[in-house]
Length: 256
Image (tube, rainbow, N blue to C red):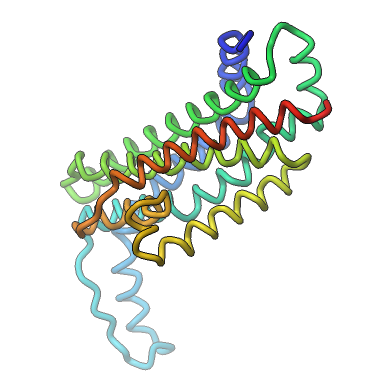
């Protein structure tokens, strides 16, 4: 793969000098810092609502919030909002470069097509990992300040499991973005994969052995419920490898 290291360096530098350094990290940090505060205030908001005339005198009994509620807010944001943002954002990973003509300019230099695709995958995976690690750190700090308690291990485990799923989705989006010529089309394919995994998670064997088991694993771990993430992580890693290889093959057959 000629030119992989040089092009990867260029991609990483470009992230730090464009809107992408503020886009995903900024969104993740906003959710991370506001999640514990929302978990702390929600019971009081519900109690205040129960006293209004519109509630007909119904009293809502809400337990006092604890650190686990703040962490659950974080994992829910990961599995819901941030996953969808990733899919839409990464739809242009390769298709956007082809549409803008950047890919032609890059490939006129001593950079092979496989190196181009792999550098795109690695640079975006790095962006996701750094953003989520910073977000988890922010969640931990605010949770500690708000609740006086914030266990590190359970937060690291639940976040790490989701990161395994996220990296697989970066690989999936590498493939969809290489297959189609538009960001919207790639995003629709990525959403289709997410829906398929969500439906598969309703089936026991798929939940236990396939990447579908990673969807609900962060919340399950936080709730202290019995779950096994070994096989979902292994099959998720294999799926990521297959998708990246598929992206290399698909991009190699495209006319620029």
